[in-house]
Image (tube, rainbow, N blue to C red):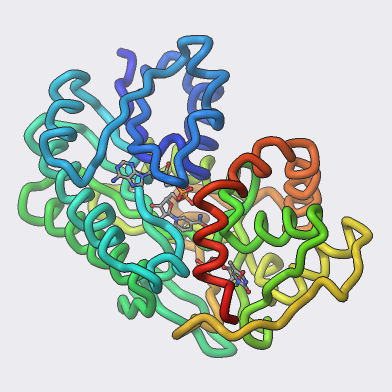
Length: 340
Ligand code: NAD
Ligand code: TYD
């Protein structure tokens, strides 16, 4: 039987990569993207699939319960991949309310609809940021206590708990995934890697927060998509699965910035240390051995190769990000970086 699949946030970065991946890997699935098309949503990311009628698109605000109910009544989904979210830490510091509305309330609306429409599996895409910050050693495991720092991370941690409550109370078949920082094609250029690549290409300064020695555990988006499909098909209901890029992709921000500069033969003078982010998490690193041992997943893209491919993608798709970096993006840039 054909699976009827909902991808929320499918016009965003990871969601659009997931939709492309699912169409390729599961061509008989009927895929519907629901997305509000906020500043971060971009139909261009999936326009080829829409033009070929390979997927359906519904504009829908998950924070509006009636929008969500209409969607579930019209399609009757078997499987939901939930990625729609306000996703940028710096924006959550400037204004937290949209994060609570979409990430917490929006998730509850989807869970409620999934329950009443007998969805068979709900995959909730969360983040390692719910665990807070690490010191110089150690890695997050699935049982690490939740200790979020930013309003963004707090909203994701809250949504994880709501998902768990639906599993425990209503026996909803739900799994939670917690991945590390993603990178790859179609990432909105407010996030570190696409911002720095596009700024170098424009000859603009690279605003490195604080000393630049914070560590992120980079995961190529295609490895993330592989993990999500595997967990959707083989994961155990009620479980949490960490997804990480592996030890070799734990890299300090300054080193990432220098790799981008050197790959593009630019000057190191572009690096500009600016005032640190408030409550900036120092280090993230994930132990993904549960996913590796139980479901046989491990990352395949090395950070050096993935970064080189990503730089090349942004060079070839300048029109995509140049368009984004005009308009309201400029207001945000001024607000976040103007006084640093
Ligand atoms: P993104 O910001 O690129 O995309 C989010 C999408 O959600 C956009 O298309 C936006 O229009 C849509 N959206 C926002 N509010 C909505 C609403 N109220 N109703 C419907 N759609 C709405 O984010 P991303 O980087 O692709 O992240 C996807 C998911 O993965 C998020 O849940 C995020 O928390 C999680 N995540 C991301 C990363 C990362 O490195 N990017 C890491 C860990 C977890
Ligand atoms: P980001 O892409 O915002 O992801 P997250 O905060 O969710 O990890 O940032 C990644 C790292 O890069 C983080 O340590 C903050 C840092 N950073 C900068 O130094 N300068 C910037 O302009 C941005 C956006 C991020």
